[in-house]
Image (cartoon, rainbow, N blue to C red):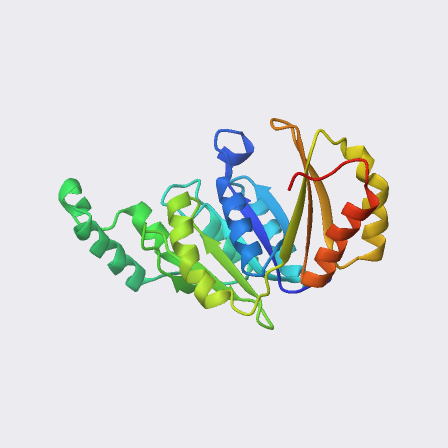
Length: 260
């Protein structure tokens, strides 16, 4: 696992830990990062607890192999949204009120007719909270909501990126992040074999041997209980090496034939 670049995801939210909300953000984000050549090495989920968020950020930031660290959730206007404060603490930065962010919020209130419904365009305490940010943050515009995404350069081209937890906002911000912060990656080559009614244990020996022969290729087995199908998936940076692994499985396991 010495390849670079690699990413990590920190998910923030009591609702995730309590099972009230399904974390679709990590699944979606991991897929996008894999396809642009920044595969996820580590995921951590923490609740809305300042010390836990700070500890997770510092832990991931200390891991030199992580080139991009994504913190998802906790950027909103209510007291349980604590990520901006935790980021400031974890990175030893002051919190400062950003007038440009506040002005953008007021513009959005007019554009979305919120000012008319509220009877004022004045920012309330929750709005001001979302405009009070760590001093060293670079803004990533949130075209789908009010809470801005943030980018922090850590060192030697490593970045920490904070995204809102609302899925459509996270996905909107990510499009800008991919352009600005995720260049230079090389996506893995992926090949699969699909078997019907093949017991997973029958592939143990060949997979173990291939793992030793091709340490640069990731090889896994994934039973699909509903379809009674077994998927063997190989991935790596070299198309020749990945396809050699797939060919070896076909050649060494004769009693079962893949359907795809």
